[in-house]
Length: 223
Ligand SMILES: [Zn+2]
Image (cartoon, rainbow, N blue to C red):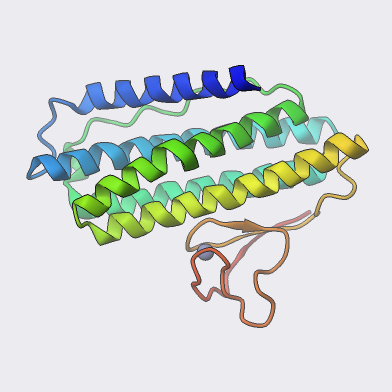
């Protein structure tokens, strides 16, 4: 497990280094603080888009392996990742002229393993984002006094933490039972922050447990 986490960290750190290198000479923002924010936001867009692509591939594999409820969890996670990427893109557009940025690389193709292994991989990625990437970037955004970026990064980090907790619970269920019969067959995705849930959040108020936004239009992932 440690080796896997280390590999994920090394890959992610490499991506970050490449990202920084790619943009180190770009004059895309008005000052150095903005440039750091731009680089950071570009990185989390890339990370969320890659995670979405991974989770889509894991969902397809879970369907092939007859784990249809886990497949829905992965689909919900993929949608949440995409929502977070869109939120980051909106923030980026407010900070800099995105037409002057170099094209963002497409997500890399992932080769899924078994469903339990894919769950572990997805959990490890969430763990890396919520313990290393987002806290670091939130701290930098706070120092720069950019409240919009801070809020978006915080929601994304909380959403990822939430996703991870469901991943851990589902992995435990699948490992114990050898099937996903006891895993929820319906998942809800908050359109505001991308948090997922296996039930309509906070019955009665319909407030998202993560971002607190009242939402009537939760994305429902079911049959
Ligand atoms: Zn929310």
